[in-house]
Length: 302
Image 1 (tube, rainbow, N blue to C red):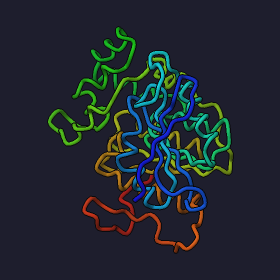
Image 2 (cartoon, rainbow, N blue to C red):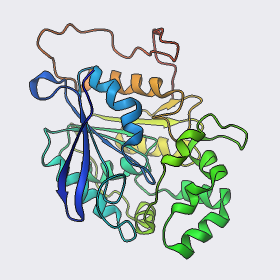
Image 3 (cartoon, one colour):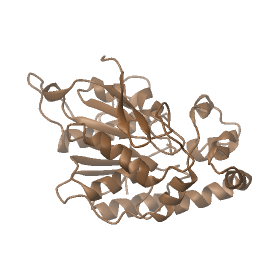
């Protein structure tokens, strides 16, 4: 397996940290650009998706948005438009990447795909084009005291520093379900202006008609509702795919392999470049946690 590389590019707010893994140039089936969500960084792409898709022959790239992870910048006044600028700058240095956005990253990807040509657009538990209203209301219901602390401190950290709230919102688990608790410390701060952007800055345009699109939701998601997923898919002219028994953090939850299989099948059908000397294998198979392949993904379309 290829090792995970690290570099930086110059952003308006300072150096942006970039992770890269997999074959490059003509040796790659294509280039994937993974965009993370709020309170996060590339850690949840580094964990499973980057090595998985690199091993499958893709050039995998992920960026820490300004003031996230080890990227420079000031979080307090960062906006969605700032994050869009960060990603657009990176795209300018890449080879026509396929955008794969999770949560806030999906919202950013939709804005970019509406403004410029992209090779493909995959949305995983993405904030919908009209804003994260259902998720915001669920945050208020789950941790009203945390929301008040956010307003008084000027950042969104209190929402994810409450273990019960973070466990519920991110992983759809109750107070006694601690199997994903080891990830709670990986969350960081987030910008209130960015939240306002996710509420108010609607995506106005659509990707080019020729752009392949994929919309995936999680059936236990407490931040992006099933209605949100269906409306996003309808707007993009595709059928949504729902991953059963999975949370908002479907990229690292126990069913991440099912998500990866759906994405792999879509890439194989619509976007993968042929690599010299490689024979085509069956598309869309799932490797469960025990390592045995299934014939088809355990998913449902709605």
